[in-house]
Length: 182
Image (tube, rainbow, N blue to C red; front, side, top):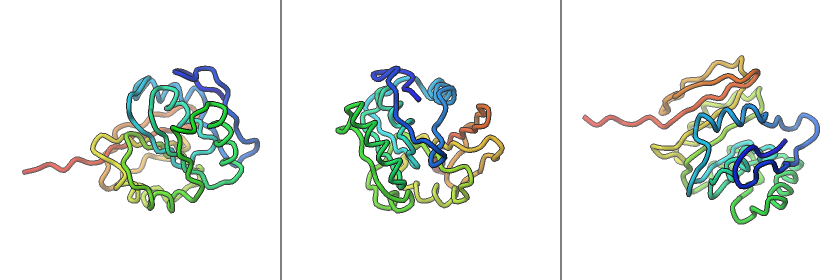
């Protein structure tokens, strides 16, 4: 696994062996960034279910200033810490070593991007999206990675912007619904 573009282009990232995490494939990452923009400036990301931190580090490489990664698995936390050290981004990454639902409840900021990549058998998506509402603003883009067989879910208070399928992976884009004033 490697970083595709930007400041850390071609740098190798450590990943866990086995099935504790499921890293986003390079071709999926490349397609995502072709859709949302190749580079960023002065923005931040929340990576929920961080795994190896693959997505957050790609965002950092492309100019995101600050990343918050949530990961509860100790082995994955060690890999994220190793990647932080290897890329020398400890001043740009906050690693929350806890369950995603608990972490979201104590975060006190909003994000420009939120990447959600839970285990494919995850069945609490709508509950998670409800908890994320205070962390979003009108321009926040939420990206939800799931199995391609899983149909996109319409979620209260969010507009489903688009859904893309890349082999066995579906990435669905959401934004906070805008209230229309009368």
